[in-house]
Image (cartoon, rainbow, N blue to C red; front, side, top):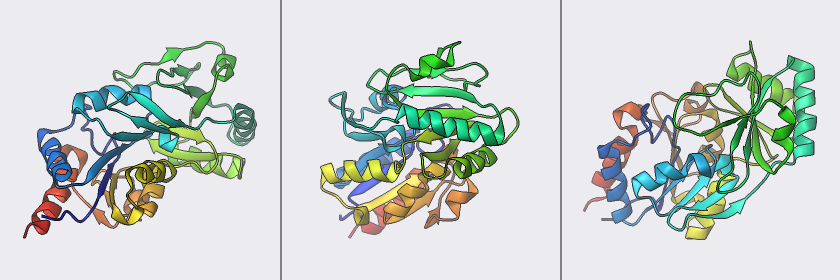
Length: 270
């Protein structure tokens, strides 16, 4: 049996994970069958390593993972950070001032660099419910006191897509601004995307973009789809991602990843 791809790249939230933050048995089995057929599986997520590690451990995942929107390449088996890119804090501060000059005050959170980097949450920032740890800070200056991977912004009135668009227009070419999920608009280092992180990880594995099938659900997955040979959007995906996908599968709740992988496995059998 010859599986047509050497690399399967999957986003986490809204893609590999169901709404209860678990991975279905069917999807686990499909991924195991794909790796048994010789392909590598890489998780590519917007979450930084501290918010990803427990999921990888639960999966028994020992390979590479791309975290922090491409900023971090993490070796899950060795619990080791292989590469990490930080956001220039002075540049981020300038970008924020330009954004707020256009849209008014925004609420902030910041993801600190490192294996155990905390997410610091400022006044007014709405933290999503769940097991992910966050540290509340009253003084926003604390967010800038140590190296960070990214800044999260929220607006009291603008929706996520509008905030991301307005912020992108305001900062020009200073930083990247992406919408990564409900209530999640992020400021990243210029040029950073899931595609840049995935290309670094793929190079370590000796595989190419032409060897890769990628699964995702949000606009931050668009660069990854542009890099990979084949991009598969979930049924629950954002319209912007569906517009550039090669294929649309079932939702994360309905084993969309497994459906595609099972079909590829069937097609590759002699």
